[in-house]
Image (cartoon, rainbow, N blue to C red):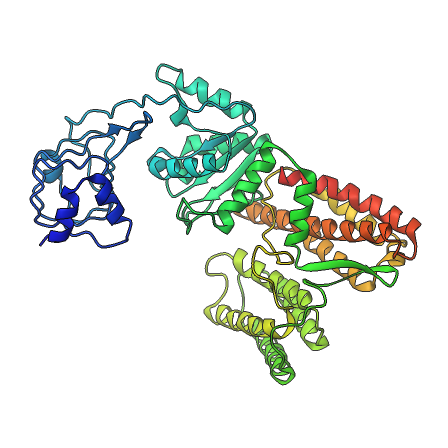
Length: 518
């Protein structure tokens, strides 16, 4: 039966009702007598309306004081039937559950009388599936609240040529933000708009649910908004905001700062040369237990030996040699007992990448279980090796990298990087650890560049790995050039002529890398 308290609140009006619903309580209006009730703008999206009397209940779309349309949301109601819908007064602006359809006599909702916000100056084109319009409207409000100048097809004025407006704004925008959902990944128009944005180097992605991106968009990184509430600031929504701002008003210096902040290592000039270490430098890890750390290293090496031994006992449907190499690299780091956490992270990251990119069913359950156990031991070592981290968002904290969505000549950049790290003058101004770090990053980029994909899926995987490699180069180049420049300014680098020569090479590479962020 209906909750009498809730019925009383509903009678007090829509404002009181919607404030009550925001408390997150379960709404039970089953068997309630709501005949003739005014439900305009009421939030009933998760209400139990089983056997409720709804004859003449008014749920039509209204125009608010700002001239905007306000819809009644019945999308997730329980027990709502076609018979109940037939008895209500509504229009096709009402948001119904997926299993229900509009009665034939329900009219279209009234047109908005608000003057759409036409873009003046640089703007973002929003591409989405119309089934997600309600959710997209919330996102557009959020973006506009953060001063992001946007255009979406809800801004088309009555009487304007629809297709011409869309095409003109798609061509004139500075960024195309594609909102990917289960519905939009199957939308021909959304894919075409995303492809147009990609061709022009304007494309940015955001995922609103778990649907995989269509093939062809693997190299463009995305903001993961699947768990975002569409209103408050979160790490991924703010990352998207910053990426959009860079598209609208590129600021290379700001991107460099964000890349440096996103790097897990910190470069500094000391004793005449540039060196590096885990970020933040000169900060101890939060825990100390050498015996436990040594046991974890030993157990991890033993587990790797067991995994590699199994490779020879059965056939596998993936590149066993590649995984064997990565496991051996990680085992070497463990045996060296280095205190540099970034070396452990880099080795494990390569294994995780293989696991994430593996085709469904290619890895046996036992292999997945063993690799998962290896990752768990890696995480247990973190507290003994990684410096204690400042709170997120504070100075010195490792932040998220900017979204990479532009174009770059990856083979040319890889060649330039190879030439720079092979220059004899580099060893005059950096410690060997810096050179080794640069070589590892170079290998991570050259590997996917050498791949020959045999399917769209493999091509997408290749492009994703290339983009990750470019982003990692950009983070390293930003940190290194900042530290080397500071060292020259403070005259603490022993060979300033060599430093200027090397800096020129890395700055030239970084200038090219920055273009993938705006």
